Image (cartoon, rainbow, N blue to C red; front, top):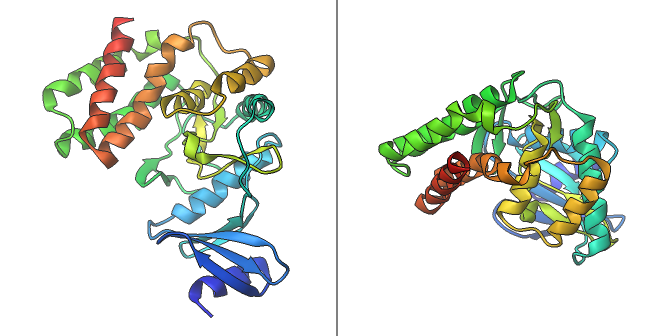
Length: 284
């Protein structure tokens, strides 16, 4: 029996009948009762704990659907497999309504970590610090935008002369942020790859970087990397919790954080995109 199978047996209480590696970090494991689970492995300290806590926090809102968490142990995470389906307008509208209810479930503060989750978490492969704050513009600049900007400058992905554009946007965030909003319960890494259109006609969300934040950030992330039936998702969202006037013009402000994360992880192309959205927001 492999280490992976031993972990699965401990966390599910079932014997393992088969396992199928999907990548270096992922595998599907079949239990002796026929159910299939997904096993993830991460060597990043606290990553499995953060993801498990995030999934449970999202599930506790009673709105969006996520894979059931069987547990985590020393870098291993075991969750239910989601049988894949196809995107559709009805599922998209449901997702929008469910996201609105998730966000309305709230968080204790901007930057609040999920219960049981570490302050030092991750967004994808990048470290992400969950440091609570009460003022969204100040928190977003200090905890989400500027740390990744500094790292991108240090690594040469951002030129030092370009950084002033993003710094200027951070200074103007109080006037660019729109009406004040209470802390929302965010998925936190809501790009299309983390939206699974399941065979049962519902959507499951995976791989969260969950924290308290601004609800427009999740929606801006969906738009940034493309999401099937996005306009129907937004229709469903607006039915339940209409967005404040001007939210479309603020999309770039909220996309700046994930673009800077991608610049740190993947290079210059994303730095140029981050500059473009910062310049556009300042000009608007």
